[in-house]
Image (cartoon, rainbow, N blue to C red; front, side, top):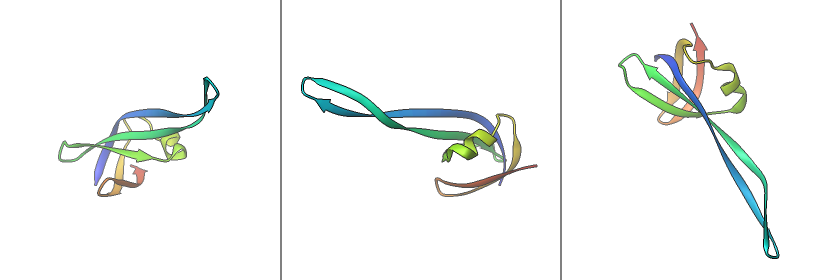
Amino acid sequence: VEAEVVAKRTQVSRGARAHGDMTDMTGGFTHYYATFEVESGSRIELAVRGEEYGMLAEGDRGRLTFQGTRYQGFERA
């Protein structure tokens, strides 16, 4: 579908390891999300890979490919 990137966000989740009475916050993951507004006016937020996230910019317009809630790709117009 034709779509525009309207927002981007990240979410960091941290891992924890217990060492006696102390908890060491280690490792963790960064999750990347992009929100697209499709031609009907609806918005959909999809998880994207980090390298895809870096290539997307708010305001980009193009063709979004997804299946259900799974992001498949975005081609700029």
